[in-house]
Length: 309
Image (cartoon, rainbow, N blue to C red; front, top):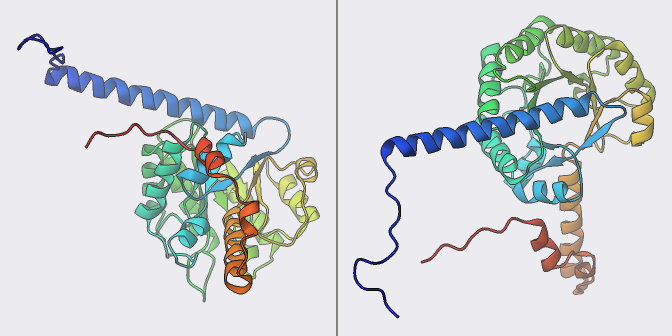
């Protein structure tokens, strides 16, 4: 039965002023939600024991990791680079590429997300500051900045310059609870100088860093020495070296946060390569028995309303 002309349901007329107020309300709601995430992220760093913060490389992996019950996520420049078919090296990704990827992860999950901000996308302290300002705008709860230069002949910034860069990043924070992680990269650039690494981490703490991080530490004794040298939370990455760690022994060493770097992305690539090799070399399909079902994968993902053609 058709309605007489003029009797259909009319959509309410929204004035430009009402539109502006609705946009303002939505922005305020997002800001409140982001602050709640930052508060929760801070709380995790000051709770007993170490928590695991796995590194997602896209929105889908963020959804899966949230569904598995993790409390916070990080991004990974390595995972992003691999997904784009490029090598993970300093300067291979732009600030906009990294932050666009981080935004997709933030929007895919209700969890706090901290980003791999590489070396701040420039040598100058102001580059680090600008990166932090943009990271806060997209809803991130933290970001890690390295002291690596990207120059193979001189891979680590001079001490004072490295500290100035962290100081600028800290000064750029406009929201309480956004956590700056300062990274000392000596050990992954063939400079296993523990004394210089500790000196840098202590200076980063003094400059206002909320978390410190020295990837590539060789063993638990070295991890323990780093943790004893600072009073802020320490992050340790697993899967980067052959060191055999557990959550329990890292917690006992006073580590507060455990990240996975690009290792989950590499694990996923490894399984794909093994499956493809089976196809090519054996002509069999046993890999499909290890794959999760389409229904299981779908349950992890968001439902997007269909748009009428």
